[in-house]
Length: 385
Image 1 (cartoon, rainbow, N blue to C red):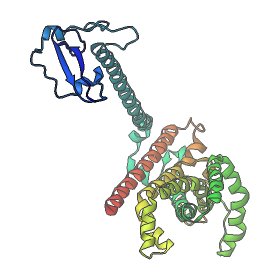
Image 2: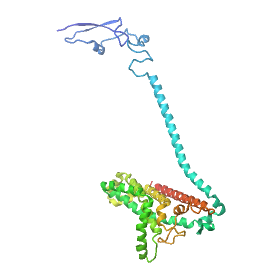
Image 3: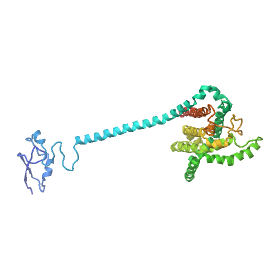
Image 4: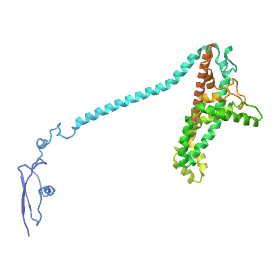
């Protein structure tokens, strides 16, 4: 059964309202189909030849809508206001960032300036003895008699190098093997227990290490090691100071080396093992090679600590102002000289200036070792790359 439906719609040129006078009639002659007003726009049979866009009419806002530049209650700020607000925030952030950069630059500059200020102050206070004696005589003379005006620093420089060298020779192999075991072989539980003990070893005061050296290492050297070698020693010797100093720098080298080994990607180890290498071959040819710059940095830190150590070395080195002749002989490092003598016999002419020159020499020795270590580190990094 055919039923005709005549539906009239009033279409306005404004696409948002239906209020124009022009009307169109659509006739549909299909049974049981009723067109709703909201789907008429989808029909292709509607044509609007008489609709002409009117810019003035279209630009008018609908009722209830805000005018340009206005906003309804509860709505956000207009785009221009929001852009200005965000621009202000961004400007304040940039200012804060510049201030932070300048502050950090100044702090870094001040930190580096402290080193030069210390060196300059020591040099200024050392001028009296440098004006009286040549630097060559001071550095190469072996005579140390302040009452007679003889200030030869060569025995103290050699004592520092002997004690530090023995400490590094003892410490480096033990520390590297310990770090390799903790990072590559040790179970997690043992590793977690060992780290606090190593950190605790780093926190023990140097005077405690000195007392331990007097009570244990000195008798061991005097009563057992020296007789076995067919010689005599008081126990206060280079080897005693080196052993105590090596134990003191253990935590620095071990801790840094373990962190360096743990930072090596696990994929590199797995690739080596996949090619048929054993675990030790992987450690030797892959892990150690990749971690060598970090290991050198750890050794440099330990060396710097050993060069500047005072109290423990002062207690066990023997403190005899002569060039060491053997590991069982006494030594007198520069830090021990400064700590032992400064504040005493200040009435002796040039004595104060000589001790401050000793401090400057010690500072230069540490600086030279750091520069040499940096050069070696750069060469190792280039060879690895």
